[in-house]
Image 1 (cartoon, rainbow, N blue to C red):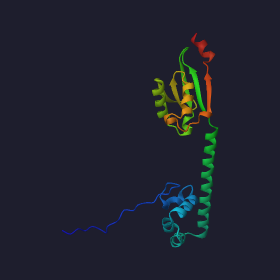
Image 2: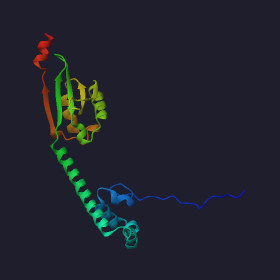
Image 3: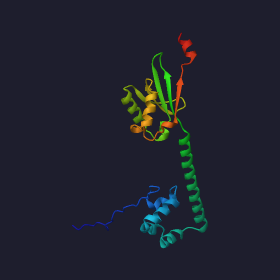
Image 4: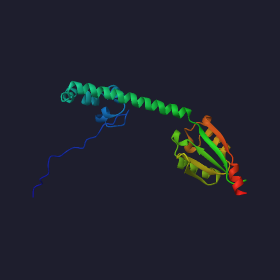
Length: 197
């Protein structure tokens, strides 16, 4: 019996952009199209010619009207500016953000330490809680604050040790600035004490 297989097809190996990490065919839809195009032109001439060479570009643009082409170019520039502003705002927010270490009283002699804003420095809170639990041999967990943000709660008064760990950039705490730490003491409210009496 004869084989009725169709024409053989070879697998395609996509080229990925070093700037936007998309396949090079899709760079034009990414946030930094002009940077992608410049990098491709300087580092991979063959791929640049395949995508943006005179013949290929003319064939792609031939189906678009001039007005649509100008609108697409304007939209691409607008998207790039928006992405740059977003990155700048994120960097500014990171520079202004403080890591808050709070000490609160559970009972008269027992304390808890709360660490907030570590996630803004790209630190995995669950891994950091596990690191603290192992280091201090106490309970440590990730919980939500009343404002809906996440924080690490550690049993015991270990604020000074946490600051030292941040200075030493221990384990998963690499990247958290030790100079942006604020210490806060939370006292129990007197109304709670009177209600207990």
